[in-house]
Length: 191
Image (tube, rainbow, N blue to C red):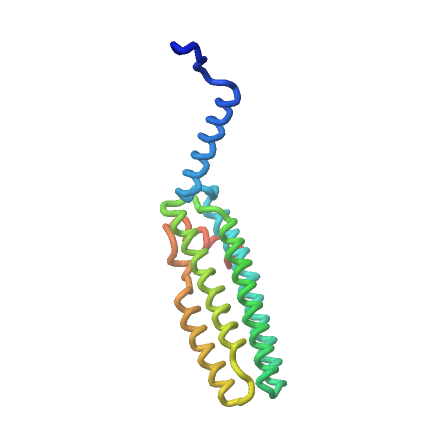
C-alpha cells in the first residue's frame, strides 16, 4: 500500500521482529512484576524443598554455636573472643542466606495464597540473616582494650540478636492453608 506521496506503508520483516520482541519483553516484564516468575509446585514438593533447605541451615548454626562455645571457654582474651564470635556470626549469616536462596528457588506452593507463603518464608530467612549480620557488625566494632566494656558490648549485641531473630521466627505448623500444613507433617524431610 502507498500513501499519496508514494511512500510505502507496510511492515518490513525487521519492524515486525522489533514489535514482536517488544511485546514479548512487555509480557515477560508484566509476568515478573506480578510475581509469577516462580513456578508453582505441589505442596509436598514445596514442603520437601523448604525442609531440605532449613535442615542444613539449622545444623550449621548449631555446629557454629557449639564450636564458638568451646573456643570461648578455652580462651581468655577479648580479642580472641571477638574473632571467634565474628566467625560464628558470619557463618550463621552465610548459612541463612544460603537457606533463603534455596527456599526462594523452591518456587511457589500450589495452594491458596501460595506466593504469600513463599514470601513469608523468604522474609523470615532474610530477617534471620540480617540479625546475624547486625550482630556480627556490632561485635566486630567493639574495642577489646577493656574486657568488661567488651563483654558488656557482646552481651548487648546478643540481646539485640535474640530480639531480631525472635521476630523472624516462623511456625511451620501454622503457615499457609491446610494442604500445605499437612504436607509439612507428612514429608519425611520435615520430621
